[in-house]
Image 1 (tube, rainbow, N blue to C red):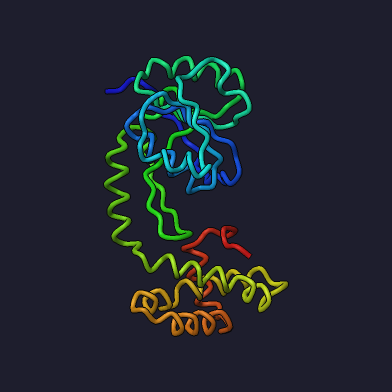
Image 2 (cartoon, helix red, strand yellow):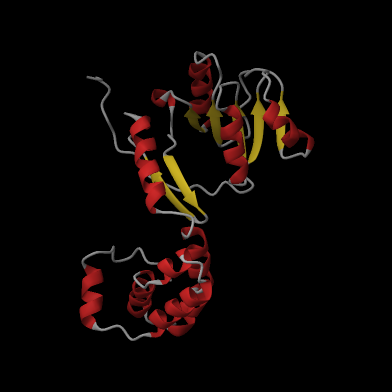
Length: 237
């Protein structure tokens, strides 16, 4: 058994738009992880003396800054988030020391003992992000669970969330002063058959079903069901 004590991770979704992120690269996942950060809108500085052919076009287009050398003490200055993925993992100890001194959050790939944050296995469909973590115990299990979830939460969820987002102002306008009514309306909408209609390629019918559910007066029996199945305060306005 692993003698390392387990601890509770706090799950968050980070907004990295316009945020400077340092990626100390060279490992085999460097290209994929840098692209993932760019997709999230981060301003990435790559620190790596190694070849990463897939990233060359991103340098030429100005999407990343690339310092073609290895890590030196002081490189974390000006950053609040750093990813360490060097081929020589012994560098992680030096990077982690500087990160602690500077208050920089560090993710050392495949080195959870030196991480301030670990990355879950994530499935995405538009605005939907389903993240699974095993706390570093067995990332392969997290991947398998993500794969099962991916089969359940298919491509129809991307347009579904776009449609729901577009109706947010309508919900607020319909119930401007009644939080409980808004909450009930949201649950009526997401419990409606709209998702199935989108999966069948009928977006206008789906929108009509959502609007009908939104404006239908909820009865107490239906609302009582949701009180037992949904968090009280986790419904957006």
